Length: 278
Ligand code: G4P
Image (cartoon, rainbow, N blue to C red; front, side, top):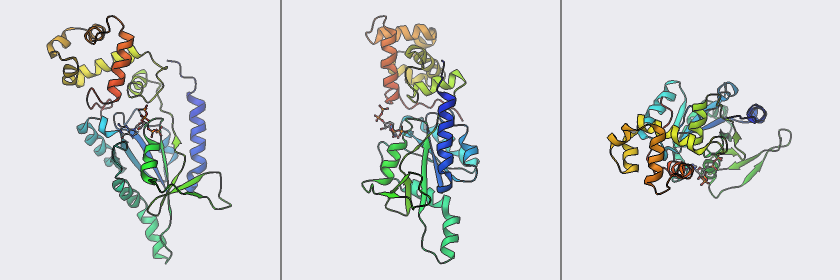
């Protein structure tokens, strides 16, 4: 695929985040739990080198729970605070608030030791499109969506949202672009709905997914097709797509079936699947 928008947008996103970095205490990087590597923006680590940093593995309800545990360990080993989350179905943000407090403890302790009152902690949320940034901001802010303008002198047009605690959230999430010079990364992002459907043909994405399911989640494919593992193992990926198209009553319209198949996949109806292995 020819992704012409990539470098320009990437630089713009980078500059926007860089501009605000001085005002932020904690960066929350939202990753898709199904793709903790492919949904990670490679520039962010450099950009936030000296900031408190938390990773959320969001959409954990759609990901393979065992793999999510392994990814949590993977990031923890690097000394990164990390939390799996299902922001769509759970509004319990206490785990995240706890991590924000841990991430800022030194700074807050120092200020309080000087006799000052508990400072406001400023948090920004960043991640690739559709990973759940806005959902998380809404969960953190709740109904309490008061906007706090910045003090004169430091104002650069951004607003802060109040929470029930001393934490304030930057109202606009930082949008990061995924890096996919590798076709497989692009296909994984497409499978999970993280990039526009126009970037790849649905049948190419479906074949990629079928291949992967055969290797890693054969049982889910068996359940979805209501057939046996032997039957699936006997035929190649393209024939499998065609057989499934017929099975679901779509004759030879494998494009239509592919779109249907990807919709089911993204809703979690095929099962909990993780596409990046730690
Ligand atoms: P963004 O700001 O990062 O772009 O993402 P946003 O919060 O808008 O979320 C994108 C979609 O993902 C939304 O679905 C949202 O409900 C869903 N979502 C967010 N967090 C979770 C999660 O933890 N689990 C699941 N299963 N879904 C989550 P939507 O509005 O229906 O959009 P779409 O499904 O049509 O993409």
